[in-house]
Amino acid sequence: MNNVGLRFHYRYQQEEKLKDALVDFSKFAENKVFADLDEIAEINPHRFEMRLLDGVLYLDEQYAVGFRDISADEFWVRGHFPGRPLMPGVLICECAAQLTSYFAIKSKLVDNGYVGLGGLEKVRFRGPVVPGDRLIVMLKRGKVRRNQMFTADFQGFVDQTLIVDGVIKGVALGK
Image (tube, rainbow, N blue to C red; front, top):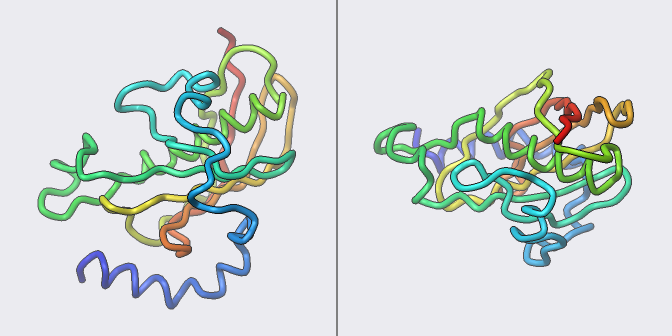
């Protein structure tokens, strides 16, 4: 089954899941960026190949929405998998972690330093992310221990089709 076939296969299974999106797609516009690469770089330390968050589309006290535009020039395209590139799940989760970091610092859950990935729970991959896709990542704030640790539910979508979901843990890292 090719990537389009995979996406169609998952799409019909996920129609009910759209009702459960953490942030309704009508609350943000995919072409209206709330925070761009420069603004993200002021908060997150990630650079070069490890910068996986291209923009933030929505942010409030409880929720955040960000995105990554997947290009054919990604470092993983040649080897994961030759002739049929699929974004590695670990990089999809890292994109969610970078949105979590941005959210935590902008929401003042962490005063100084950075936020690191502390763990993942209940992660399920439900479809592919391929070059040409825009991965939309959504977060919903969970438990918080200020300046220590917090959790968030997260989801990833391509073309409003649920691709991944789970729980992410962020930990405060000093400078």
